[in-house]
Image 1 (cartoon, one colour):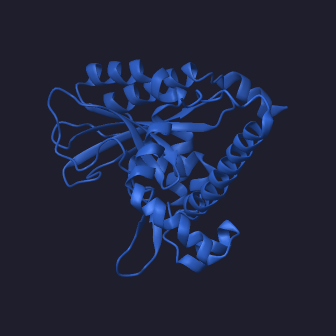
Image 2 (cartoon, rainbow, N blue to C red):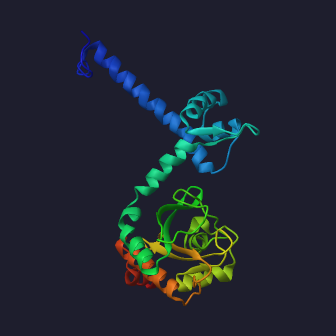
Length: 264
């Protein structure tokens, strides 16, 4: 009869062999994760040689891992260019991780209240490895026809959400967003846009800060341009700013404390 799992682990040759196998298994996983890490940090498709160099291993070894990753959906290979990129399952795992952040849970009530108050669609985005990524979507009773949902990555330069990140996040500062616009967003805590994402759609977006005073998300209101007031002083803008401030408080942000730190 086969011994239960772990019965030999306390000692003897079998126990040492089992421990060795476990150590080898962990080491193999760490090496394999180096391949995925290299793809994630590059944030663009890579040829095998460059990927192997970034992962610190010979191309032949990297290729063996890639074969398994492709089979599991963690990696995909472009049939035309031969370049490798993170696959659908890797993106799904990344989205699950983003959704597990406290900001997603702790601002859920803020988003729902904002949606109900304005009767407009509202979403929360955080900065992912490919840019502003939608992690929560609150649909209004009158839905709007846009081709974005949870998991969508928004452009930095041409979306209100992306411009908020460009104004407050160092990683987004290199994008080509007008300097005067950035300064205005920093001063008002608000980005507005007409024809956002699609023709005829308006958007208003405000940042969410954490206890360190760093941007951790953006709350955005979307609506059909007809009847949607995207002006910086309008009702929607004021409500969005208040929602961003409320969400920031829930994330531990203290504007008075941040001001004191800057003045010190």
